[in-house]
Length: 409
Length: 104
Ligand SMILES: Cc1cc2nc3c(=O)[nH]c(=O)nc-3n(C[C@H](O)[C@H](O)[C@H](O)COP(=O)(O)OP(=O)(O)OC[C@H]3O[C@@H](n4cnc5c(N)ncnc54)[C@H](O)[C@@H]3O)c2cc1C
Ligand code: FES
Image (cartoon, rainbow over all chains, first blue to last red; front, side, top):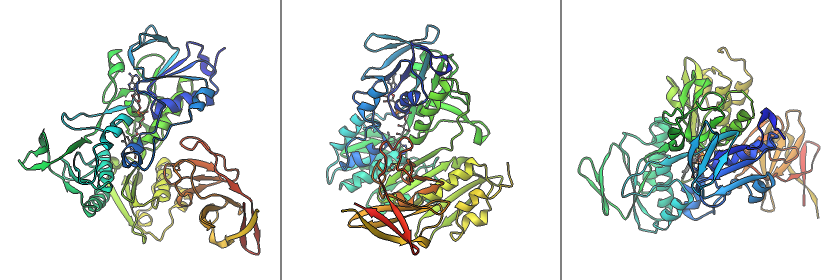
């Protein structure tokens, strides 16, 4: 039997059973594909969501969130090989070799291998459930926790550890927190909230080395620690692709429809770098839960033959204490900025370039900023050029701007 | 025993928007569609039990404010990941400018 796009048994193999790969495997069925689908996952157990690992799972407030019920994979006829890594890829033979010695033939292959935390010898990292379990076991009231890196994961760990009664110090090499991804004004608010919780935040403090029981900073100062966690970014998991000769440059290089440089091989999620049509086809590599989901679904369609380019607006959120931060678009693409301070204390930041809205970020209690950020995201997708005065005025509702005809594009 | 409860005045909800309503310790979300019909669902998302009322309503769809899970609020149907479970809906009626919902 042949499915849409002419894919025949031999079927589709998805490497990586994370957010992206699992959604892709399920989406293949939703798109009507009837051939074999094999989901190869290096991690043991059922696929799970990563974001709670630094939040409710780390604090002990919640168990692991499964990506879907186990029955759902079974019902969809997806063969999930858990705890088996793919070790080699032969793009000419259309074969992928597994750690247990099996070799799978494929008609189409999706690489959804994600990213790995950049290691720092002497420090724990947080990427997998196993990492979260290991870290949680170390977090007790009074534990001195040193967090290296003031990005999202480091800061979420800091907030969760502070909530558990740990004495937390964050050291960040850059002059401020969350440098690349979040506007300065919002980052300052996050820093203030950490200070209020008793977390010592030291920016402009590069680490010289880790010694047992302490972090030695470049300026010679020392932070005494019982446990050190590194949140110094992640590196795309590209080893399999690179060894197979695929183009790799900060991620597996894909085109607009998520196809790699090898025939019938696609890549999606944290592991890929793709051209973004909303940003002059600039190459971006996202580390975003929603993008991983959307790209998984998109890749499923693409490998069944749909040529539509992936154009969704990047979006992510971070929860720290009662605050939630949401960012849509690419703040780094902005050349002008507009701030809206709402009466409830929530703040929104809009980034424009040549009049066009290219990014929006918001911070507030709980889900206070969600609706405004979502409308901002829709405006970005519309390539809208909203009036900056309207964006700045908390009395002007944003939703009607969506319908207003845009003077640009 | 099911009973009709006055939830809000029709004017309390903008067209294509949602408000929250609490009754007997339970949260409900009351929606007004773009064509001025009223609907009600459970107040919480089925993904991580976040309140839906801060979410964006577009047409007949509510988006959860937390991770953008989407539901058809007229039927309760979950429209895809991350929401996998439908949200419960409740009958509504409008009398004299008041929106009532029927709760179990
Ligand atoms: C602690 C933490 C908190 C986060 N919080 C947020 C948040 O609040 N908001 C947000 O937007 N994003 C957040 N993220 C990011 C989000 O989780 C990722 O963007 C998302 O998981 C990416 O999905 P993915 O499927 O591309 O990669 P992954 O989830 O990394 O999955 C890739 C999978 O592939 C497997 N794999 C790799 N190589 C092989 C191989 N050769 N063979 C077999 N299997 C292989 C890996 O073991 C892994 O299971 C967080 C991430 C972490 C780690
Ligand atoms: S809580 Fe609603 S989508 Fe996650």
